[in-house]
Figure 1: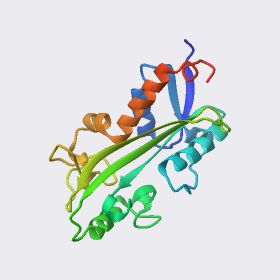
Figure 2: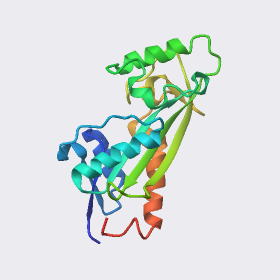
Figure 3: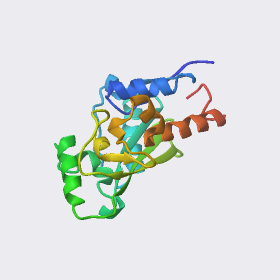
Length: 205
């Protein structure tokens, strides 16, 4: 089987490493979009899927390779779905994780319903003009607490208590989190589809 190289729509070396580990049993190796001179795109979509498509298309155009992108965030039903696609910039364009967490806790003051879910959309484009992208989505349910706990993870992890447990996402061992998380679930779905699809597993991608 011929090895294939795909571009991952990220400049984060840790994320590239995570995806390469998860795809270790396949013939796919990921390279970061930063290797092709792409630093990022304007995420103007109103859904996680739309933003993932924008990122995958830009990465495919820059690299000339099939591109995989993910867009993720936190959805809180009591806040109308916010932070949603604005999760990384909830408190402003240059907001830190701490800024976003403080605003989330503030906006949930006196709110009884603390249910939340992390969401992930993964999009695979064979080419920039691919008319039929492969799309998978997954969620990870939990509740929001007022006081951050744990020093693992990032973003809203210290405030997110996983359903069925008593610890936050930031308190989970990295291996456990990567297996249970919204992104981990989405990757599982993608790997299953790749294994089943003759088209997607062909060596010309």
